[in-house]
Image (cartoon, rainbow, N blue to C red; front, side):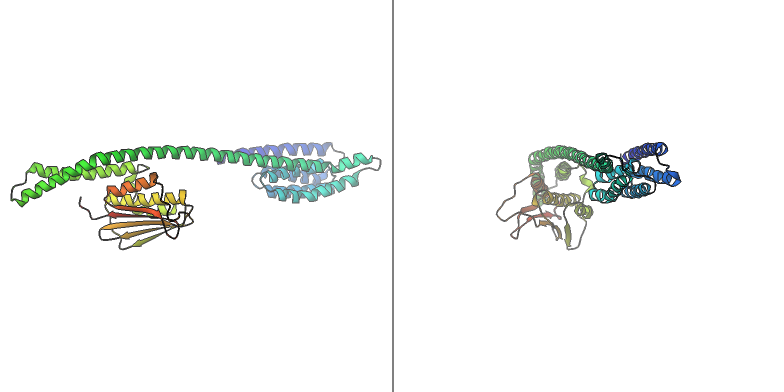
Length: 378
């Protein structure tokens, strides 16, 4: 898209330069004064330079100005020398270089007016002489105003495109958030309806196996199969719930190994501290830890108005502790409103048998602390 736009601009500039060059040469050939070799060289230098006005507007303005001054001094004053400068002034002003356009065009204006007055014949009426002398001023004012109009129009179009893109991003975010909320609802229903029942089956089977062994009786293969199946069902259900809770549907690929990338893309300066020897975590704990840090940093960017944040991971003997703090505007005594982010974090932690605390810090800012067990039985 950018390449096509640049190609179109180059073609338009080349066409404009060719048109102005043709008009200038025609005026020089048909004019009352003989331009000479130097005059034609100056004309070509000033007009052909317009072919590069979009790529190097300031250079083109300087070239057209010097060529215009030289042509006015060595050949004759008139529009033939000032039109290329007028186009160059329009270009730099439309691109936002207003002061440069005025500053560079001023010498040519003064010189053109003085040259026109000096070239006026004595028999010319005073009003006509003044009109011819100040005509270049009107041209340059028109060029400057047109450049301002083009600049404002370009800014308006750019802002409209940005607003449209932002609206599209907002629509996508709303759709993704609604899908995430639906996944969370399904995960909650599965957790509430199945986890409890499977846990009861698992506990009852375990108790039956324990009592049978305690009495010295043979344990039925069917009973052992029920116990093992309940354990496997618990693991599978946790994995399913974790996938449902993942906002982007790529849960298995996200873990603490990608924490540095997550923090770098967080949108707020953040530091990472690790306490204790790092070790391999269970896959569901690893994914949950990543998602908790992700949600906490997302909330910092969206709601806290914080300048910095910190992430601390503490590897304990039986648990991984995650602490995310910021220096935002949260004040003690203001309990957080449980949005989708906090609800999702609580559900992740609860599904793993951990604990979550979230709230304002005494010194200001917000703190999220999660403790995830890492040594639990399957």
